[in-house]
Structure formats: structure tokens, C-alpha cells
Amino acid sequence: MIIDKLQEFRQQVYRFLGNGRDAIFDLMDAVLTSPSVKSFA
Image 1 (cartoon, one colour):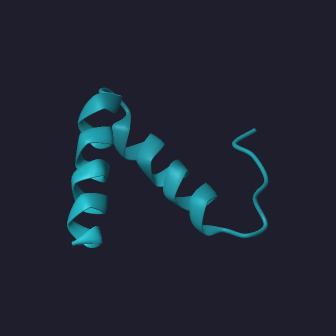
Image 2: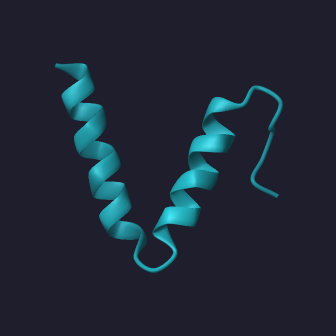
């Protein structure tokens, strides 16, 4: 199912990020889910 693929992708990205991955992952979630944010900077 598509949800399973999305969860697997998120887990792989999380493992790849290394140190600080919690903060980076939270930032990515905020940018991707907020319509008013146009970039990371």
C-alpha cells in the first residue's frame, strides 16, 4: 500500500541524516506541510 511505502521512505531518510536528524526531520515536515513557507532559508 502507498502508506507503507511512504513510511519506509521516511525511515530510510531518517537513518541517512545522522546527527541532528530529529531537528532536520522536524524542519522538513514543517516546510513540506506549511503552505506559507517557500524555502528552507
